[in-house]
Amino acid sequence: MRIYIEDLKFLCIIGILDCERENSQEVIINLAIDYTYEKEFINYADVVNCIKTTMIERKYLLIEDALLELPLLLQNKFPLLETLYLKITKPSILSDAKVSVSTTFVSNS
Image (tube, rainbow, N blue to C red; front, side, top):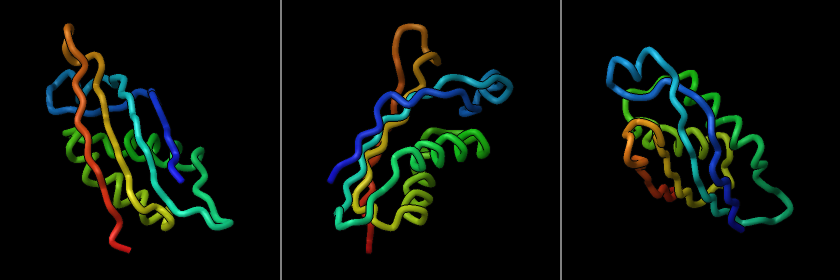
């Protein structure tokens, strides 16, 4: 099975510029989770809550930092997770473009 969570938008502190450390900015999260469904499932509402809470509380300096930590947190919380495709977008940091960074995480279990 594959769960898609698309265009999850919220405000958080993320970035290294002074203005980014002082003011929350919008981020957009897109992800897909692959897992094997056999009577147990991954609750997508819990996934959304975990991502939002973590990003708001951690106040990452770089998108890359979030992309390294979030997959491990999600795997620990959702052991059925086999593969995670995660993309974080900062839509407002540049006036003429959206900036995104993504990763693919494959579980070792």
